[in-house]
Length: 89
Image (cartoon, rainbow, N blue to C red; front, side):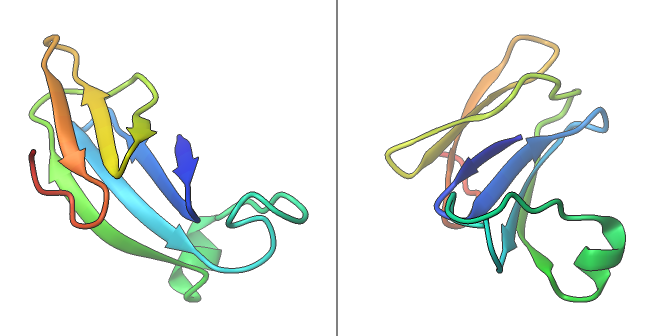
């Protein structure tokens, strides 16, 4: 998981990259760390901002720089996504 500006970006075995926004202490890198669980997510503590279908498992940690999320899948494809909406760049 990579975290930038209060948004967590994570890849999955199912081949998706998801951006989750979270509110509360630690969400922007300040204060006590906070773990987002399924229960907390369903209670509104985290919200899915976007999901991108990468096509194959994304096991490596995404990299976030300059408003772009870079992620690689198991087939070796590197994809650049707009951090705001998940569209390919």
